[in-house]
Image 1 (cartoon, chains in turn red, green):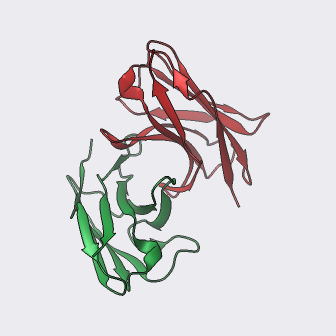
Image 2: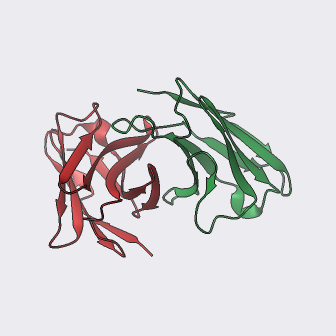
Length: 120
Length: 108
């Protein structure tokens, strides 16, 4: 059974960088068939896919055009985890952030969610 | 981006009812459609993927159908645990996944 455990600050100041980490148990971040996504949810934007990292003989990333200039998702094979970094945040980035495991182009597993508030 | 439109936004039903939720895509997505259930304060949970494949451990009263631009999620015999919000999700465009706005199933 796969478990995803999220960690990171819940309050970020405007213009700063939002950083979250997702620790994986029950699977490997290097799994050739999986993709490791970040998805957020807010009342104004609903569920919004942000991006993914995945391994297919080498590492790849895909990012949503809505955040492409501000986002980085990195795998950490030594710790079996992956991270999200979102720069230059504004109050519009306030949301519940989920790390997820994707298989067969669907989200099979979700982290517990982290409510991140962007406020001075 | 491909737009996903769910209907209805809210649905009132009773235990034992058969319930159908529709999801329409703004362009063809083949069968790259998943359904999730979300209870208040919890993360979404996968119900159906590739339009009609039941997720692991998901009760058989849930079923999905459709292809192209129109899809349905059916709950045959609504149970108390099923009062929740349901979302569709398209993954035809691998770099631009999008979700429907949700359908809340509430007690009549």
